[in-house]
Every structure is written in structure tokens, then in C-alpha cells.
Image 1: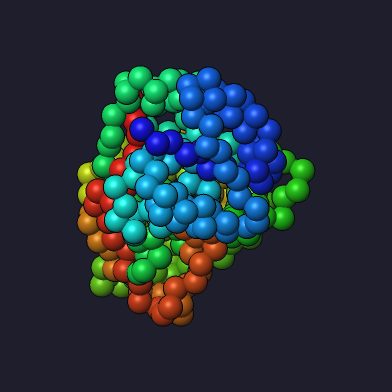
Image 2: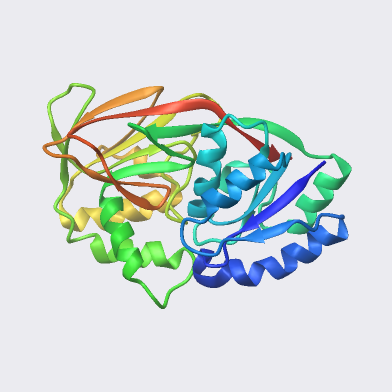
Length: 292
């Protein structure tokens, strides 16, 4: 079996560069020595397409949600039979929380690939219009949090998102959204989740599955500023849906209407929709992944 490891040294604010030393050693012990790193931002697409052209059967990607997404989306869109495996070296590493295999253990992954003890699993992706995503897309508050997180220079790991969320908690004005033709309502955020977690620590979509052909829509209506902090704390525990301000619905597709073309985040990347009308949908079974 052909195996190639792709890694982003900049992921996790330098964690990727540190992690690859142990990853390289673990994979070499199992006879896998094909390891290639990105050279600049967005270089994952080049590495991924080279792996497809070279007929690599299993592409192991070391990084975080952004790196994983920048490899998973072109792999799925190409219709390649290659399988993708995940190693955690990023900030949130949220998508891997939906898998049974431990993405923090390169030795176990390498040994499992060598002895054939791991299995292939088909998982979904999502899309906002024609922008595909691996784990989560969102409108509203999480866009403000992402922008704030990009300004954080000293923090590492999930603390980046938690501190950024606290900073924006009392600033964000709310975003009017009409969902599936209903009258517009002001929302704190609208999250469309393939998996269960986002932002490194928020259990945003309890019960979501990455292989059910559905998108979990989590809508949080705007609420008074002082009531936002308790809601944020409940979202970390996954209990935010027990109150009257948050709902979760599992559907194949959702239609959204905004006053103007909205900004959104897709797997931590800032994007802007082409127009005020937006379609969010599942892309069922689009990606082959390695799992336990």
C-alpha cells in the first residue's frame, strides 16, 4: 500500500513543524518514508493533487482543521479513490473528534496502516453554495470570533478561540437571517455542522454524525448582552440547546436569506457569499477516510 504524509509546518502556530519529527520517525519504523510539507499558505492543494496524480492510496494529513479541509475538499471534489487519514497538529483539531481513531497518536496510525488493522469509512462534507467544507460553516458571531482570533499572537490551542469569543461577546450586534422562507429574525449565530465540535472547545452540535448525509443546523437567536456569557459556557458543555434561544435541526439542505451578501467562515477560512440568498447542504459520502 502506498502512503504519503503531508504536513503543514505552520499549523497550530508552529505545532505542525514540531510534530513532524515524531510523525516522521513513527512512520519510518513502519516503512513509510514519503513525507512532504507545504512551502507557503494554501500549498496543500498542490501537494494533494500531486498525491492523486502519483496514485497514492492513503494520504495522511498532519495539521489542524484548516489544513485537513484544504486537503479533504479537493480530494473529494476530484472523485479520487484515495483515502485520507488525520493527524492532529493544529489549534482546534475538531473534525478528528468525530473519529474512533486517535489523531494524536502517529505510532498507532502508522502501525494500523502497516498491518491492515484499520478500515475505510465514507463521510460527508458540507457546502455553502459552491464552497465545500469538512467540519463546520457559520454566519454571525463565529465570523467575528474568527477575525478576533487572527489578531491573537501570544495564545496557543483552544485558548485562542475562547479568549476571542469572550472579547467579541458584548460587541457583536446580531445578524438578521431568514431561514427556509420564514420571516427574518436576528441571530447571534447560525452554525451548519457536519461534526459535533468547533472552535476547539465548543460542543456545538451534540449528536451530529459525519456519515448520515445530513447537516446539523444550530441557530442561536440574539439575546441580551449579559445573557450571552452563560450561553457561551453552556455551548462548551453542549447543553446550550436546553434553553429557549438555541435550536438544532438535522436536514439535507437549508435556504438562507440575508440583507446583503454575508461573510461566513468555512473550517476557519473567511469567505463571502456571492449574493444575499445562500444554500447550505450536505454532500453525502464524499470522502473516504481511515478510521478504527
